[in-house]
Length: 288
Length: 300
Ligand SMILES: Nc1ncnc2c1ncn2[C@@H]1O[C@H](COP(=O)(O)OP(=O)(O)OP(=O)(O)O)[C@@H](O)[C@H]1O
Ligand SMILES: [Mg+2]
Image 1: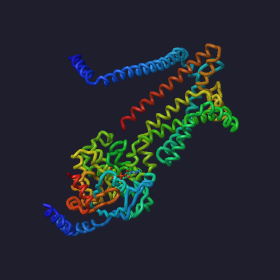
Image 2: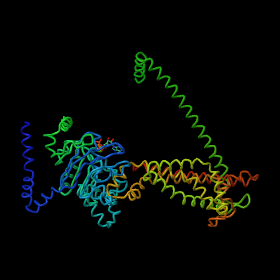
Image 3: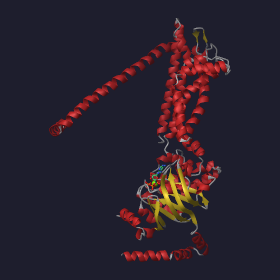
Image 4: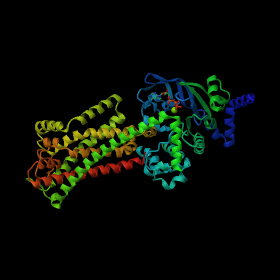
């Protein structure tokens, strides 16, 4: 049994590039093959990242490369620093007084500590939170507010809003109540609305902090399918406590413990063939 | 059926847990005592409030007439037009000064100020709220009326009132912004909004009912002030003439305060009717506050 898994994993590991090529051939030849190759582009590069809240060190020497058009999962016990790390990637951690980091964090080719125009940087690196947080205004205003502030014309804003609602599968349900409050929507719908809102400013990277932990299985499935589809043209990093979720959608997974990245591997390999004993213990405990 | 079940339960508990039963008995007596005292206190307060309200209404209503709103006071009689307009002018001036200042300061200390600095401003504002209004009136008299040469005037009175109500507006604004869950600000900032944009659009929307409540309460406090105005606004038997300085203005609390001391019935009538108007305005303000608060619950 164990032998089987190892063999399977190894073969997957070895033929990854061949698989991509195969996929490219199957789905449309040279053009797609090119994008498959550019999929290897590194969008997020982290070197020797240490981070502190005041005197307390919460991240230690993180080392990590995250690639475009992939979903990367961060797992690990509560308090190990997943959220802090995720929020360092779009400088949200930096809004907390007393936070500072050392080392290199490069996102979309820009070093986060040298970003001048934080706002346009954050526009390129979208974020979805644990609890849906629609703004206290109509559904359509939720989607268009940021665009309006950035000077997008009204006609264009509405078009983008409808487009994104469609993309998250809400348009048919909501098209007749775009001017109503979002607070009457179900949790799952609210979260998808927030996703559409994040997508409306055209981010290239999407950071997700336990985005489905407050949702029922059906809404979770809907969201996961969306993430997989979005990852075809963007980079997604997701923090999750749900290992099954990581297994379902993430190509690679990083296991963190006590502020360190213990292991960063292809998801299947991490779960079925962990190299580090700490990973093995955690995965076994979580799966039971 | 019910009683039998009840007695069954108490029988069991008496047999098995006598000390518990004692405790709960004592607790019951205690709680009845506490409740009675609270109720008596409440009844007492209600009685006083009702008494004041009833006497103001019964004595004030007879003086209500169109003439009251259409004529100015002359000597100890006449109407209240000058006092009503003067009060309005003082309230408008003090709100125009203290509302923007107080709201901006409240937003600043709740969202943007470094922790330590915010605490300092909060402390200063509490101290300011604790200063007796007559002290502020006297300060206004010395500095504005005399030193700055404003004379008794709407501006000197309005500024004095705004110093008195500023801390209330700061405090309620601060509180309304601080109770907004962080997730709204973060959600907005994560979209690439500046903190200022997020405050102006998302947060202000959430805080508005609380902020307006604070302003309305502050206005009702300003309405009731007399002492500082006597030092700064003076008194005039004529309608305010839109001159901000060197022209004294009339106000309702002055009528209540002085005319009750006059030995004439007509003066007393005017004082009671002025009191009735003040109470009515304050009541309306508080009803508005209630409406605002009910509106704000829907979002949370
Ligand atoms: N604003 C803050 N100030 C000080 N310490 C903080 C702050 N935010 C987080 N921490 C600390 O940093 C460490 C990492 O927290 P973080 O929220 O990143 O963990 P996490 O892995 O996301 O946990 P969870 O799975 O519970 O969400 C914890 O020890 C936490 O107490
Ligand atoms: Mg977290």
